Image (cartoon, rainbow, N blue to C red):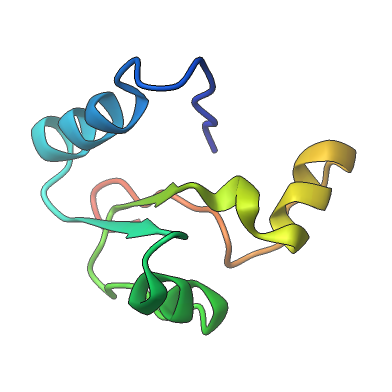
Length: 85
């Protein structure tokens, strides 16, 4: 699990998408600010073949914000599968 933090508008999302595109065959990108993506996140509905799942603006999700503050991340919110494992 990797969190990317930093000032606004410095390229965090662009960097994450670049890594996904150039280092993983299959990835999924979900943005908490997009209603349809938020529904997928809440239902844990991700691309089944994704090796990497990128969550953008996920700190706005209260359950995740509390976990980020106090630690302890349950499945299936954050995971990366390289080479199908």
